[in-house]
Length: 336
Image 1 (cartoon, rainbow, N blue to C red):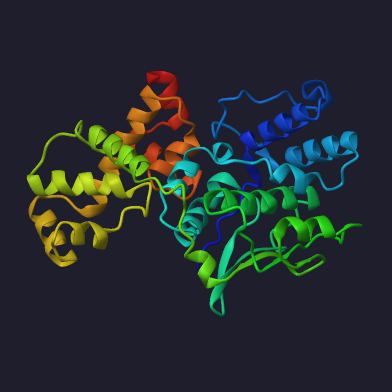
Image 2: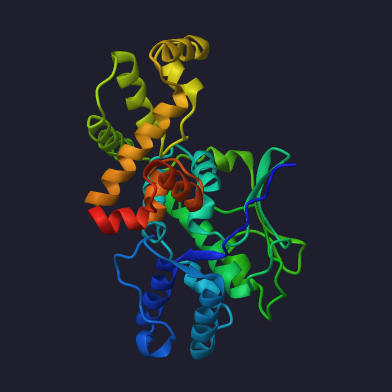
């Protein structure tokens, strides 16, 4: 039986920044109102926040605003900047289905609370968050689900709507505002929280699709890889392709081999002759890029993990400690 990775039940501190900004627009002194200090504007994904603290902040703000629907209202202010580098990776997707697949792959980096499960449903699919891993509460749930739909509209078109939304939470006094925002039936007190999309919706092109951004990521990878000791032309080319894959699909030997015009078996055989392997080269590429980012940028550790193709922050930390015998944070403090 596969091991289930426990969720840390934390969110990016940038979500809290969105709450402070929302209160500012309401003319409230958010710094005096909320029990935690405002995160810096450039925090992005450099820090995270325990879900219990996030819920307390939301409940405090909702009480002062006398707004039980704060989650629905705050979620509509979330933007790609609140999810850091993942926002740029998603923007480079060609359609909504591709963007959601990337979100699924990296969701623990930006919302490590309740695991997302994508299920096929007839001609479409469902994004499902079950109750098995705990219920963070109405304000937390509704901020996240509203924010996700709001982001999808920003990526595709203003009229984008799911075909069904459900929440685990108790039924609010007024449902009409939920159905007006989501543009579809919304039910509460269900067995899981769910967004149902039809197949045609998944093919919606992203008007933010940004090949230039993808090219920038590729150029950064190429520049970083150029610092690695030169090997054979075969290995140099493979390293470039690995570096370009990392923020998109992760390192897959089948895709690398195909791009090089080789079969997987032929590539593996040539690597063996050269005294290396695909996994060794992936590790070399990741280590070089990670060390450069830690030394020369202010990217958060979660951002770096994402750019290296890790779906979990902890997996990046374990790998880095294996390479260097120190944590990424300790490496940055010593070399930054």
